[in-house]
Image (cartoon, rainbow, N blue to C red):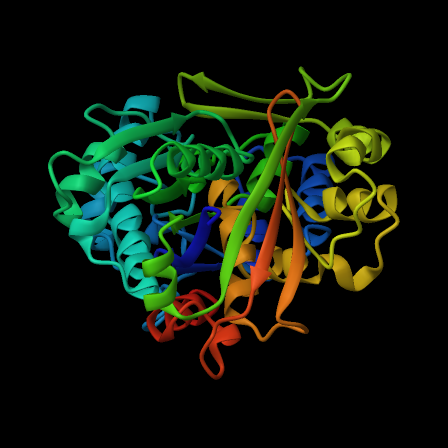
Length: 406
């Protein structure tokens, strides 16, 4: 039996940021001239995002917009503001040091990892003691013992659980994490692998006139997602719901783009390089980058990482896809923004959660990371055995996904 995703759980911080609020906040910063203000409005308005989530309650509009029941409460606004000042009483965005931002990550990321993982396990019907391996993913903070260790401790997993962490791989990292999970299952048919991604991108926001930093502030968001992967037939039968078989993976580097997408550590946070060339490079090279991987196959569905609206536009045009093909990616972008590595799992969660057109569908997943790196995966979406099983991984798993959309 091939390795398959039984369930995907998602988790979001409670604070919701309407896109127009973040736009106006950045445009109102001291020293922003007319040209920079125009750049800010253009970038935010073209992002095709309605709202995003953040771990920083102080970024919310006056009075706050905490999503009731739709997010994970991580820390009180007051306590968090004292530890990492975000803006002053006049609304001026501050510039905390990288150490201060990373300390906030150490406090706030583990609860999101754990909540997404709990929902994934509940959706799969898998007990904590059955987990044999943990793979964690993040590029927005660093600490040791790291997220993999914390996840084992926070969930009460067996102390002998084998752990791996993919750090600083960027937006594409969830697919290599699933590739690793599939390899672990191939090596050990009894393996049950918990893959968890959590990204706190908004910790690294800063006021800037740099167009690349403006674009980054206009799209990135916070969120977490986790998947339960196994080749055990008994667990798939017990689960009974829709699954995603992990058939094969691919990876390649584009001919150019090494300097156009990068993620480095600066003195005032992690710094994103995201040039205007990125969508154009993807548009020029996407067909060649994934042509050999597809091998002439025409997938039924597409799960494409929404690095931004223009990235999706270029993929759609470069692969001659109908507009409906990228609807799931555009919906996740509109409702949640770009949550880096977690985003592709949000898209796949929707596929598990929504009724399928057929009992079996072929799904191509694409994600893009620094380099430029193009990661690919071919999956088979199979409807569950029970009535309505195609509508979700399980009642709990589907509920967790629906909650993430509020």
